[in-house]
Length: 315
Image 1 (cartoon, rainbow, N blue to C red):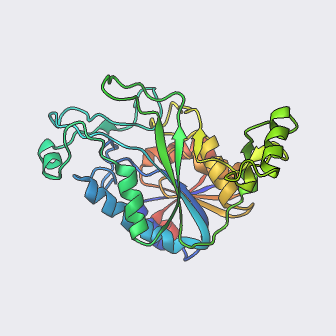
Image 2: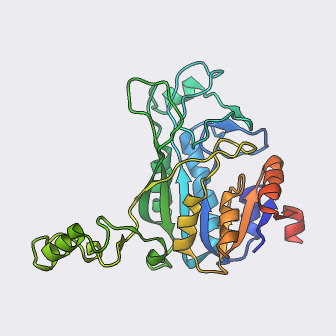
Image 3: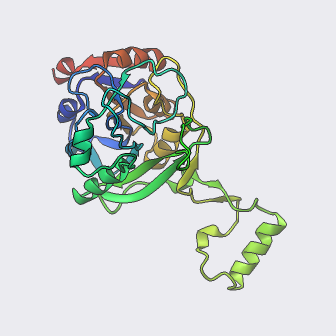
C-alpha cells in the first residue's frame, strides 16, 4: 500500500482525522532541547521539560481519540543531560543513533538560569522519557511496557564519569485494558534451541516441578519464546535525513505485534519515513504527519508517498 503523508503541525492535523480510525501508532517525537530545524512552532524547543511534557500530553490526547479501542501506541523517546554551560554551547545530549554529520537542524543551547530554577543540576540526567510516560499514564493511558532499545553501536560520548549511554526507551501504551497484540508474530529464539540436550533437560526439570517459578511460556517446544523487553537493534544512518532515523527492524516489530494486514499505521512525527516504508511492505496503510518541508522531500524519495497539505486534506 502506498503511504500517505499530511504536511502540517501534528497538533492541527490530528484534529482532522476521524475518531478510532487508526489501529497502531509508531512514532518518535522530537527530543527536548536537542535540535532546531528552523520550523515555526516546532515541538522540542520548550524552555523547560515540564512544558515539553505538557505538549506531549496534549498531542497524545488527540492520538487517543483517533486510536481504535483495541489499538496500541509505541512511543520512542531518548534522554538528555542538563548543562549549566553558556547557552551558546550545545547541550550534552543522548541522541538517537547516527554518527554521521548532523546535516539537518542546529544544536540547541539551554538557559542555565532556567535549568537551575527548576531544580536541574549541572550534569543531571533529565529523565524525559519517564517524565512523559508517567504523565501519559496519569492522563489515562495504560502504560503496558517499557522496552529497552539496546544499541550495540551507540553514538560515542566523551565522558569518563559515567557509562556511555547505549539505549533508548520504547513505551507500549494502550487506551484499553484489552487490545490487539499478536505475540506469535514477534516471537524470538528461546533460551535453548529446540531438541538440544539443554532444552530437553530444561523441560524435564520444569515438568517434574523442580522449577516452580518458571512460567509456562518458558517451556521449549519449537525453539521460540515470547518477545522480551530488551531489543538489540543496530542503528543504521540514512545520509540525507537527520541523525535520528529508525532502523527498520524497530517499527517492524511494533507493526507486526499491533496490527493485521490492511490496518492503518500512523506516525505522527514521520521524519524520514522508516515507519511508513515498513508499514507499506507489511501490507498496512501508512499515514504520516510531518511539519518540515525538507522531510516531505525525503519521504517522497524514500516512500513514493502521496503528500497533501493540511488545507487539501481538510477539503
